[in-house]
Each structure stands twice: as structure tokens, then as C-alpha cells.
Length: 455
View: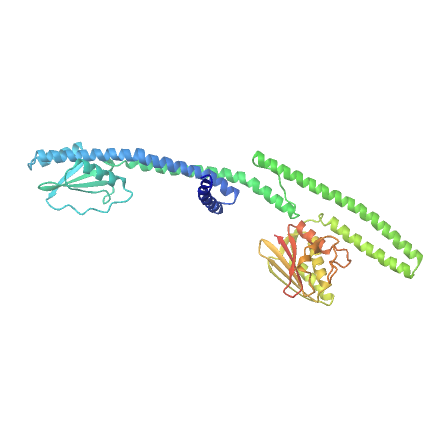
């Protein structure tokens, strides 16, 4: 018994999870849409509940009482006619009905009543009046609540004729109830309009904060000051403080590296001067090569650690950079092709971006004979493919190739100085723009380096 209870509850839980998943998939994802839904949904539910109970309790009750009153008047007129069947009493009955009851009475020749008309599905008057007449009259009757919008027609079969009664619709129907619904809808629209305006003003500072953070992640500067509600202002102030700390850390790192760079260059210069004074020998020749290699490694390391954060962002012609890289490749005696689709101008740091692409192209130039540069700007993302026909890099080692100072012992290496920083510098530059660099197999058979950058 104890095991049967959890099993019985499992089906409702599964059903609830499916419903929750279905609802989550169809719910709006944006904060503005969700906030608007939080405001609108209670209003709609409240107004619907009020309208429903008004219909059931008030509107239907009033209509039932009015219809019962008309049915009593019709029954009284028929009783009067039965009590005084002579023809001269018809005029008296018509006068009493018109003056005292506001009902026009006519007598038609004895004939069958019209066939029952189609009952309107949502007509409360038709159903209510038919029910009340059935309770009051013991004679066949026919009603029409649709034909003439402001008149209700009732026909009652008598022994020698047909009594035709015409009453105003307002006598049997609470016609002014629609005003309640109209005012309800108008009030709801006004409340929704006010809520929409206030929500838009509250969401706008959040969007500005998100845009400022996104632009900062791309290495771009944007004017931003905290606005909006207290919590949003706190988030904005925290972002500005984080931004200042990051910039201060970068500035301190750059200052330190500049000092290290100066000291290392001074020592390397002393080595070169000492070797020059010693004279040209076999040993000094080897030492000069080591010193030159050391200088290249130091420059590559400083470039990687320092980056190009001080450069300002500007609209840059990407096709011009690709053409420069193509010309440089052809100057080395290699084949090169370029193509570009979409908007050519993209906001980047020109020198840093060109350097990142040059590192990727230079990596291909050392191990391939043909290089293809392809660029596409779809309005949201800039994608650049650098394909070569070289030996490539094994799949399991492509991510390792981005590690600083990582050396590939096989056919490829990352940069000319063998410091292992070429691809690391390229990825660092692209990530500072908010983008990414990935490696995969190229259609030419070698390696494809793909740069993706938000625009």
C-alpha cells in the first residue's frame, strides 16, 4: 500500500511537468513582455470574473424580472379577453394595453402560428422570455426577439383569432447592461496604457545597462550613467565601479609591462654591444642568434600581455584589411583569394584587429601554398574564414594550439619566432572585441581559422 501511493502520484506529477514545460516554452522571454503580462493578466482575470458574476447575478436577474413582468402583462390581457370575448371589448383592451402597459395589441385572423425561429445561442432575452411565457400561458405562443432590434413580438393563439403583441425590448431586457462592459473595457485599456508607459520607463535603464556592459565587453566606450529605480541604479553603479577597477588593473599592468620591457631591452642591448666588442667568432655568432631569439620572444610576450587596449574603436573597412593580407601573402610567392559579403564598415580597433588577422594568416603562410580569405557581415555577426591547404592541426590538439607558449611538435607551429603566442594573441585580441577564434578542417584540406565578431 505504501508503494502504491507514490506510483499513483507519479502520473499527475508527470502531467504537471509536461504542462509546466509547455507553458514555459510559450511564455515571453523578455523582461518587458513578462512584466507587462504580470500587469495585464490580473486585470483581464479580474474584469472577466466581475463581468461573469455581473452577467449571472445582476444582468440575468434583472432580465428575468422584466421578462416575468411582460409575461404577467400578456397573461392578464389574455385573461381580460377571455372574460370579455365580445368584439366591442377589443378596443378597450387595446387602449388599456397601449396606455397602461405600453404594449401594442393587434388581432389577426385565425391561422397557424409561424414556425419557431432559430434561437440565438447567446440571446439571454429569448431564453428567459420563452421560459416565463411557458409558465404563465397555457396556450401556444410564438416570439421573435431578433427580427426588429428594439421590438419584441409575441403571438398567442386564441380560440377565434391570434393576438399579436408588440413590446419595447427594454421592457423585457436589461439593455443598458452593455454600458458596464464598455466602461470595463475602456478602464482596462486605460490601465494597460498607463502600465505599459511606466513599464517601458522602468525597462529602458536596464536595457541601457545591458548595452553598456555589452559594448564594454567588445572593447568599446559608451556614455553611461545610472538611472531608473533604486535597484537598477545600484546595479549601474556596481557596473561603473567594476569598469573602473578593470581599467585601473589594465593600466597598472600596462605600466608594469612598459617598465619590464624597458629593463629587458636595456639588458639585451648590453648583450648585443658586448658581443659586437668581442668580435666575430663562431661562439659569438651563435650567441647573437640566441640574443635575437630572446629579443623576439620578449617582444611577442610583451605584445601578448600588453594587448592593444589603449586603441580607440573606429569604423574600419574590413575588405581593405583582407586585401592587405592578400597582397602580403602574394608577395611571399603564395596563392591568395579574398571575398566579402555584407556591410564593409565594422566598429573595431583597427590596428589590433589587423594584427589578430595577420597572426592567423601568418600561421597559414608558413605551412601552406594557397590561402583563401572569406568574410560575411549579416548585420549581427562578422564572420571571417582563413582557409589553407597546409598539413593542418590534429583535432585533439586544436584547442591546445591557443595556449600561450604551447608548441606543436608536429608539422605546424604557431608563429615565426617559435614563442607559441601567435594564435594566443589572435584569440586574445578577438575576445577583447567580444568575439572568438576557432579552428577546424578547411575545405582546401588544411586548417580553417574562423573569426566571429558581434557588430
